[in-house]
Image 1 (tube, rainbow, N blue to C red):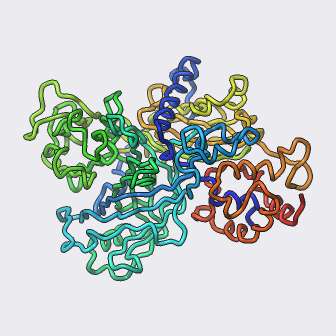
Image 2 (image 1 turned 120 degrees about the vertical axis):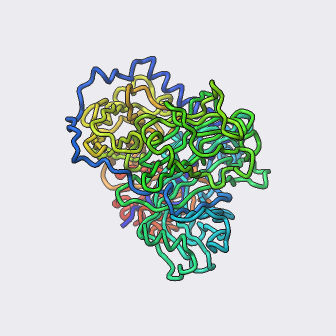
Image 3 (image 1 turned 90 degrees about the vertical axis):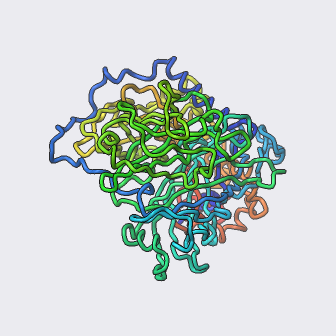
Length: 638
């Protein structure tokens, strides 16, 4: 049976990175960089070359798996879509001091400015697709098309409103709003109205690659990517006239790969598009053993230190089709106040080429024409240059309309030599004494990289580091270990994978942030050195470890001693932070809590990933959500 505390956690704990306004997201990114600088000055990035290897390297032999990774959304058949999203986030909990219950003032939930309630204090945390349409489809042996006469699914809706309860967007914590996760998002394509011809659940995953993709001073400057799988798929039997869905069902019947980019979220309550933003994405087949949140392929990375120019672009090269497929959806900067690309900074035409032989790949990309990169996934025929494309690093450069590249071109993006990413979700919450195994993959030119050594380092997340007093940092840092150490080297096996164990100690981090539970950690997976790759926030692991919590005797409303173990102490904080609940239940009032107990318990009988069961920010550890709190407290013990 779910706990009483879980019930109130339900619709309350919804944060969102896109809930920033007035430059708060930019300040968060700057604090992230400032935290890194503090670590560098404190010499907390050890020299990996002086460390002992954390796992015994295996010899690379011909019997190892050197095959191409399995399919993802970059492969055919694919469905491309675009439109709007709405994220009705709650914003009072975006400000750290608001968690300090004794100092909280009612105006902090009412005045809509950056220091008080922010822009949407009564947000419901709902995340929905709005007017999202299928724009293109790509079948295995045919041209990609936007013609509904070829496939009637073109022009139809990708709907997130097929469930009675909407999906939710939430942050890991007030001090880490850079890996917001979607929970309970159910989606479907309604080619023939009801029922959907395809429906399923987005497996919860956070966004990655967040950056400022506008070079000017617009308020709506952020862009990020969500990648996961659609699972629990239901296929309608009437797929005869829908060739793309028919092929997807044949190739990948049980799960599909999905990636979508969200950008330019509107936070001005006088704006007609208030709480809306743009979305574009792709659905494709999903390999059974492939990572859900990253493509096990290749990656172009920005060469610029300027905001709003370039970011990240995953791509694959397939030997069978002799085709390079790249995703530029979250890669290129846009003009200030416009969804079009910043051709003044990027150039009107850009070209892919190999680095060593400077062999051009396909035709120039026109950033000023129909492009608007829809679809944002582009394909290039590399039959004539396959050996070079397969063996050389790739780069993105400025060029002319005919593909002419100057002798000293502006290089916008270059390929990462060895790509390392986790195979599992990169956002986790741990209770004291809990462990989790993390698996990583390494690929080079899209193939498994055997015996590749990389460093893993535990650090306090930069924003949390800012709020952790210096005399608390050592204890907090020691609360989480990798393979029993703070920094280790591990090496991939002959198939390019390696696993490490992250363990939270039984004592917890020691309540370093006071009125905010636990501590936040960034796990850096490094290559040549342990200096973090902050060029793409989300390419690290983000973890929260909760404080140890105990209470004396039976749980009660007021608790014992100073009352810190009382239910009131927990509920009152939520009452302050989530005013959307007050018309339903006043969390700081015992009688209101008891009067609404029955209905709230029923909601908390939902599954963990259900949109109606939302302890998703995990502000409450398991100890605070003990079932005994419900049963004994609900019987009226005050």
